[in-house]
Length: 336
Image (cartoon, rainbow, N blue to C red):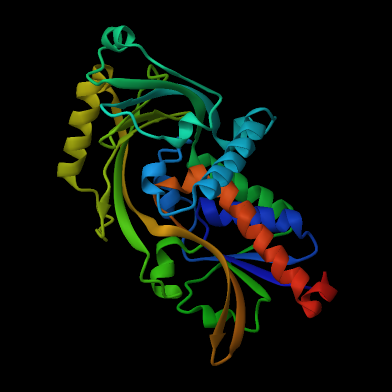
């Protein structure tokens, strides 16, 4: 039997593990990770489907579009299925607000979008020149990741709690490894192009907020099913996962000044984490040589703040690369 490992249990790793198991049901597929569920960076995601071209400019445009479209189609299928109530998906309209006209991928890939007129912008009380109203999805990772895990395990997949110090540990144990280690790839590969971008948000109870708001300075308000996310920040090469009170104060001020109805919202909890950024996102095959032998690896990491928006699409891409490894190796092909 062919043995495949997927390193990492964030939204990218779990999406990849599920697709690999769906495509190769007779292979043994194991998720190997140190952190699961609420311990992962994905748990702190705002969850809005909004691929941001400005932070993905090092990637080929056609690749971004394909990954985005594949993820959007997956979310669309989930929303229109009985799984919707369990997986955390919600259909959401909202506003992208800016003082500059700029390319934003969500305007190409959504269920609908329209530019607001100057008169409409004034009536809404927005202090900006350009506002686009968009119909898209939000995905609450605190529900979505357990759902992905459940689907993966139901197909016969397995989970292994382990902190890898080197990919060499997997030589001779697995036939193919899919590396979705996120920021961990910086040391695990090692890959000097990977760096952290700190994010921080406040989760509040505000059931009266029914639309998302995303401003050009990374201030956002994103309602999910049972809570609303207020953010945010992007601080490059900051390795602290501690909540900074001054940043929280800034987030609160920015969000409540623009959406005054949030001023009496109940704070549920605060979160800080490190987004794994790489220019470009790395999705490719790699045959790695170690003293113990060679290892067939498919890399899938470096999504930064676009993890949720690109997760299913990049997982689909990575699964195709796994198939190439299996079909092009006579020994592995004979085990299928």
